[in-house]
Length: 442
Image (cartoon, rainbow, N blue to C red; front, side):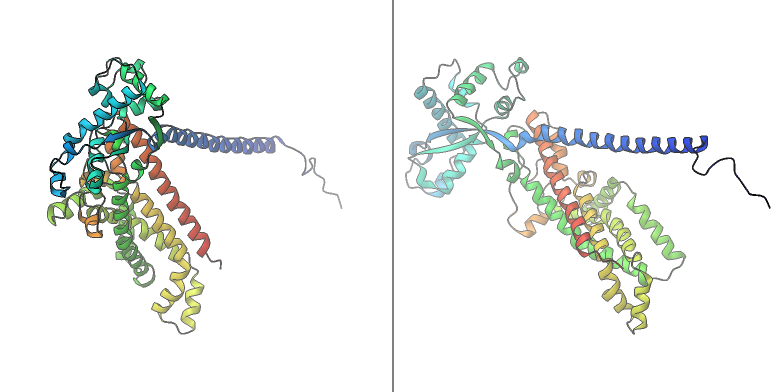
C-alpha cells in the first residue's frame, strides 16, 4: 500500500489562481470606477441645475412711495368701482414716474437719465399691480402708499451677475447710465433682492415681463392631470392585472395580451400624444390644452407600467397562501381580495407612484395637445375650471421658457427644473417609504 502524495499543496498559489485573483481585482476596480463616474456625473448635473436655477427663487424689488392722486385715479371723487375700472394701467404709469423723480430729488442723485429712462428700471407689471391694489381698496386714493415693485429683467440680471457692463454694449434694453442709477438705489436700500414668491405661486408672463413669470399655475395644471391619472389608471390597471393574473385562463390569447401590454410600455410617449390628439380633441372635441385631456393621454401612457408592476407584485405572492385560503373554504374572489391583494399592496403602490412620477415629467404628449405657450394667467377658481380651462404643466412650461429669447426666462426654466425634481424625488421617497411600511415577509 502506497501513500498518495501530491506535488503541490492546495494552499499553494498557482499561475491560474493569480490570474483569476487579478481579474477579480480588476473587475472590482472597474465597478468602483463606474460608481464614482456615475456619482461625479450626478454631482455635476445637480450642481449645474442648482447654480443656474437658484436665481429664479430670488428677485430684485424696488420700494417706492406712490402718491395716488385723486385727480388721476378718480376724477369724480365718488369712489364708484365702475368708474375706477375705467382708469387703465396707462393712467397709473405717470404716478410711478413721478415717484422715481421724487426719489432722485429727495436723495439728490445726480444722473443724466430722463425720467422715462429712470422709470424704465421698474417692471412693466408695476402699473397693473397698483391698479389691482387700488381696486381692492379704493380708500388708498388720495394717500401716499408704499409699493414693492419688481425691477425689469435686465436690472435683475445685473444685480444677480447675469448681466455685466461689458455685455450690454449693443443692448437696447438697458444702458450703463441705468446701471449706475441702480447702484445708487441699491446703496440707499430702495432696490434690493429678496425671495421671489411670485415664481412659485404666480402665472406665466408675456415676453415683455419675464421678471413676472411664475410656475404656480402650471403646478396646478400638473396636479390636476395627476389626479385624473390616479383616478383612472390605478383602478383600471389594478383590475386588469388582477383579472389577467388570478382569473383569466392561461392560453394563447392572454399571452398575446401580456406581450402587447409589455410592448405598449416601450412605445415612445409622443405616440400617445398623437393618439390623444386624434381621439380626444379631433374626434371627441374635448377642449384643447385642458388638464383633463392631458390626464387622459398620460393615463393611456401610464396604464402599461401600472399593469406590469401590479402583475409582478401579484405573482410575487407565494402560491401557498392561495392554496391555504382555498383549503380553508375561501372562494377565489375572497382569496384574491382578502389575502393576495393586501400582500401585493406595497408593490402595487410603488409601481403606481413611479408611474405617476414618470407621467409628471413627460413633455412630448403635452406638446401635441397644445399645453404649451402663454395660456393661463390666473389660478382656476373651481375644480371644473381646473380640469377644463386651458392650462399648462410644469414640463411644458419649462420647455416654453427654455425656447424664449430673454435670459430671464432661461433662468426660470432651470428654476422650474428644480421644482420638478423636488416633486419627483418626493414621489420616489413616498414610494420607498410605503413599500417599507407595508411590506410583509413570508
